[in-house]
Structure formats: structure tokens, C-alpha cells
Image (cartoon, helix red, strand yellow):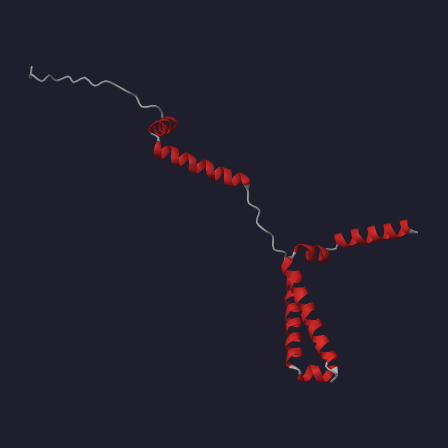
Length: 144
């Protein structure tokens, strides 16, 4: 008998994990906070409305604190409902490759600024090596 209960529990767990609403509830902290606030406000309103001895209807219509708690619970439930309807906010994953490429570009720029040999080798690679030549004048200083 315990095997069937265990398998039922496992089936229930796997079904719950596959449910998109349960997934959303597990992953979305803001949604959980809204539901928690709504529950606490509703519990406070219920306790105050039933515990004062006047009756629930009179407490809801005349007690400002009960009205405030009910309003807070309704707002929290509305926010939770909007969070369920809204598309899931995905956190942007930072790319290690992008960060590595950016670091390499910055390092190369610094190397080019600081090193004349590096600048010369880059310019030679891009535009070809400079031709070095000797200049000899065909005119003489003596005027001859």
C-alpha cells in the first residue's frame, strides 16, 4: 500500500513540476511576495473581523483597519494576477566570450598606443613593409 502512495506522490510531484503556473511560482520571487502579502493581509482582516464580536458584516463596513487589510490583499492579488499574465522576465546571461573579446580589443588598443614596435608591425601587416632606401643627391655642393 505504501508503494502505491509513494508512486502517487511521485506522479503528483512530477505533474506539479511540469505545470507552468507552479514553475512560475517557484522561479518568480516577486510573484511569491505578492501572494504572501495578500495572504497575510487577508488573514489579518479575517482575524479582526471575526474576533471583535460585532459580526463580520459590521466589521467590514465600519472598521477602517479591516478595510485597509482587505484593500491591501486585493492589490496584492491583482499584482500577482498581472505577474501570472505577463511574460516571464528573463535574466540576461552575461557572455564570457563577449567579455573576453572586449578585453582582447582593449588590451590590443593599449598595446598599440604604448608600443612603437607593435604599431610598426601592425602598419606593416596592413599596408606592407616600408621600403627603406638611400638617397644620394645628384647635385654637388661645390656647384660643379
